[in-house]
Length: 140
Figure 1 (spheres, helix red, strand yellow):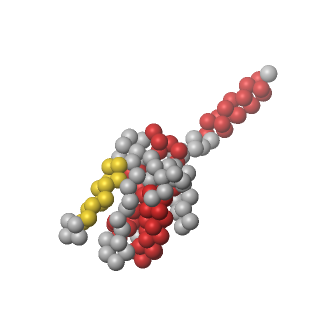
Figure 2 (cartoon, rainbow, N blue to C red):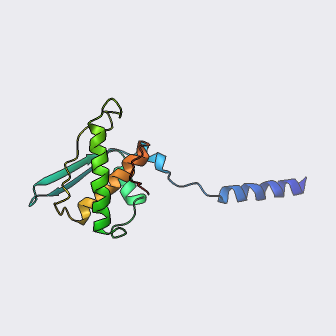
Figure 3 (tube, rainbow, N blue to C red):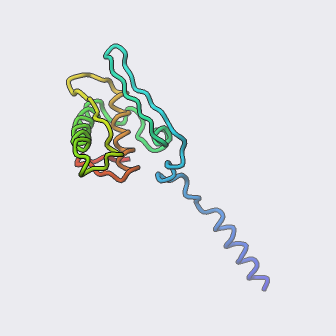
């Protein structure tokens, strides 16, 4: 009987030392509303992202700044924006609650690294959060 108590305590100790699993991507739904403003007054543009959990995603899951080159981000964003805008134009095929407004992204304009970084990561977040798959792969 004494051995069963020790084995039980040992099992409980081992179980309690196990991983708690940490935060999962699905936990982002519980985050409060986030607002990210991307602006450059000299180029007269502004992007405002109001999305629950986006800041948490940027701080916890997104690749750090500098991981991707600006050229890589610009190429990805050009293709992702094109596909996103096509979906905005097809409300009978794609959920109009997800694809609300077109994104005016001109590939001839140098928006800088930060804008391209945040826009790309928004597509990664959007793709994972709403289970949307683009022809251009987005990864965490």
